Image 1 (cartoon, rainbow, N blue to C red):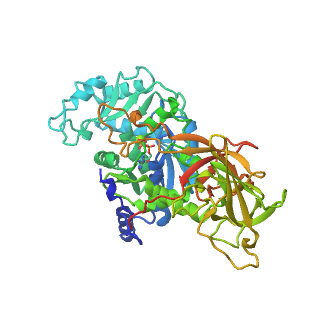
Image 2: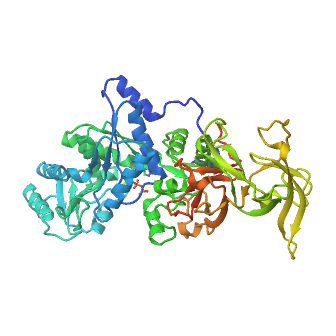
Length: 561
Ligand code: ATP
Ligand code: MG
C-alpha cells in the first residue's frame, strides 16, 4: 500500500498512462486498426466506485482511440447471479455517460466453451478428475514443493470424453467430478498445475436456465470470451497478473484470436469498502437501507447522495492509472465533486437551526420579492424569486450575544446584510424564562436595497435567511462516513470490518427552505448557501421534501498539484 499522505493529483497536462502508451505504440506499429476493450462485471452485486474506475478506463480508452467497448457479463456462477444486478449495471454505466457496443454474456459462449473443452480432451490436454476438492487442493503442492499427479490423470481420451459428457448430462452430483487441464503438476506457476476447467453445479442460471449443470471456470472463460470478441486490450486489476500466462496458454493452445491482458491497480478509497461481498452483507443485515443507501460506495448510492458522473470522471482522470496498489484519499473525490457542483448547481437559502428575527420597522403584512441569481457565476442567468417579510429565520449560529471582535455576523447593536437584501441591525434580544434567546428584534435600513439608487453601503458579514411565512419545512438527511477507519483493507486479524462502522453516519434533521427550492428542476444537487450541497431524495413526497447531504460546502483539503 502506498502512503495515503502522499496522495497527489497528477500535474496538468498529464502524461500518458502506461496503457495509453501501450495502445499508442500498438496503433503506431499497425498491430490493430482500432482497439476493442470490454467491461466484464459479474452480475452478483451492484457496481461500486472501483468499478467506475474500470469503466472510465475501458470506455475512456476506446473513446480516446476511436475504438469500441463491449459490456460483457461474466456470468459463470449461477448461484450468485441475478437479473436485478444485470439491469442495475446497465443503468449505472449509462448514468456515467458511456455506451457499450454490444451487450454480451459469457453464457452466450457456453456451447463454444464446451466444444473447446472436448477439443482439449481429444488432444490429451484435459481429463476428468474424481478427487475431492480437498484432495485437489492438497495435490497442488506449494510454491516451494511440486504438486502430485491425480490418480485419474491418465484416463484414456475415450473415458474422459464419456465422463465429461455424463457430467454435462447430469449424471453426477455437485463436486463429484471436475474437468482439469493436463499441463504440469510441477510447474513453478501454480496456475499451471492442472487448473480446473469445469465444475458441476446443479443450479438454474439467470439466462441459460437448466440447460447446463456444468459451468466453466473463470480461467477457462475469460480469455476465450475476449478472443471471440476480438478484444485487443483486456484490462483487469492487478490480482489477475498471475493468471495472465494461463490466459495466454489457452488462447495459444486453441489457436484463437490473440487477445492480450493488461493489469492495473484497483482503486481503494479511504473510509470506504469496495467488495461486493461485504456490501451485500451490509444490505442483507440491514446495516444500511439498501444498495442505494446514500452512504454506500455503490454507484446507485453515490447517485442518490448527489454525486455527479462528471465528478467521478474527473476523479478517475486525476488519480490516473497505476501499477501499484494505492489507497486514494476520499477527500480528493469530494474535492472533484465540489468543483463540479460549484460550477453548475443552483443556490438556495435553507435555515437549519432557526432563530426568529422580527423587523420592527417593516410594514405589517408586506412581502417584497427579490430576483436572485440561481448561480452567482451567471449573474445575468436564470433567477429565482425570494420573498422578504418582517418575520424571518436566521441560523442560531449567526448570532452571538457576547461576540468576540472578529465575529462579523449578527450581535447586539451590530449590523449584518441579509443575503440579496437589506442590512439589518439588532436592536433587542428577547429571551424566555430560562434565559434562552428566542427572538431578535431588528430594524432594516431601506437605503441598502441592492440595485437601489443609494450609494452601496457594505458591512462585514452576510448571512442567509428565510421568510417564516413562506418557508417550507424539509427533511434533511445528513451523512457522515460509513466507516471510522481510513484503510479498510487493513483490518486487524481479530476484528471485523463491521467493528469500524460509524454509529453517527446518518442524522435526520429539519430545515426551513425558501419556497423556490422544492420547485428546482436542475436534476443535480443544489447548494444550500453557506452550508453544503444537497440532493433531493426519491423518497420525497409533495409537501414532504427530503434532501440528502451530498458534501459540505468547504473543506480545508486541497489536492497537491
Ligand atoms: P468485488 O471484489 O467488489 O466483487 P470484482 O472484481 O469481483 O469486485 P467484477 O464484477 O468481477 O467485480 O469486476 C468487473 C471489473 O471491474 C473487473 O475488470 C474488475 O477488475 C474491475 N474492478 C472491480 N473492483 C475494482 C476496483 N476497486 N478498482 C478498479 N477496478 C475494479
Ligand atoms: Mg470478480
